[in-house]
Length: 407
Image (cartoon, rainbow, N blue to C red):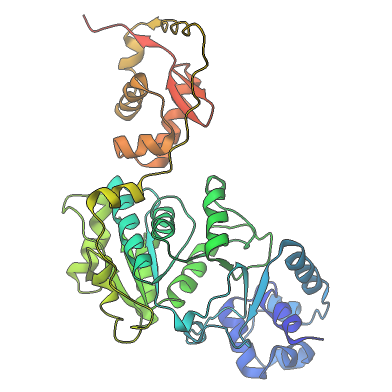
């Protein structure tokens, strides 16, 4: 039986966390030795009873099923015994025994890899800074690593791709599970130009508790971590930054306005000396130029117009109007009493007025109003339920009514 089978059996043992799997590997010397150990050997170790019972189950059905799934889905496996397994990860006390990958296989120890993390409910400023920093990193030869979440993760990956660089996304679920679903196109772009990685078998649901575990891999693969927007002390961004510090990685942070809630966490890290303040990609890469001079280069500056164009979303070609008589004017929207408008919350009212001018998608609304994406989606649902909005193709929304003028 190949060594990978025993590593898969150990890494997917029910109830056993990554640190426990590494401890067993160190104690017995190999996953094969763990597999062939009898129940008495486990009684000598401080393991929970449910884990001891699971380790006594020698069935390899689960392992064979995983290998079949990987073959079917075109996923590769990278074990801690492989020559190209990152030494950076082996430095961690809870390194993953196996990584599942899609796309390119990187030699991370030879890459100037930089992680970018930040808030999901970020501001347009955060989106802009994450995109520009990631684009600058990519153009200079760095490898950008992030998650696949909405907000800063997506902006960083998109910026790096627009900069012509390579990217890696580490997922909390299986490497075949796209989450969130609306990032499916980004997932495909990352897999085509870089790599998708996960420590979880195919089909694994990205439950909430898996994200902090995932974050140790994001920071562990990299030389440093850049934080772009974080609110409270318990934010995932700050947790990842502290994990990076525990791993002896450099931490960088993008400053923001003193009164901006989404910049409170990053500003605090800077003021405490936990993170280096950065405004440009080279503020980060100057720390590694000596060690990775063969990888990094200072690219020529883009003009402001070029920079803005690269960061603009790709426009969808508009259909040419057909020849013939002009289209009939759209009918006037029904007019409702102003009391309906007065009963809306402030954010609902702002969104309604915006959609009274033109149809927009949720992401565009977030960019225009700076209302967090979660609250935008809630407001859209409520306004639509009340009959005030209509949903158009491509998940765009427009006002379905008008309200009486204030007289």
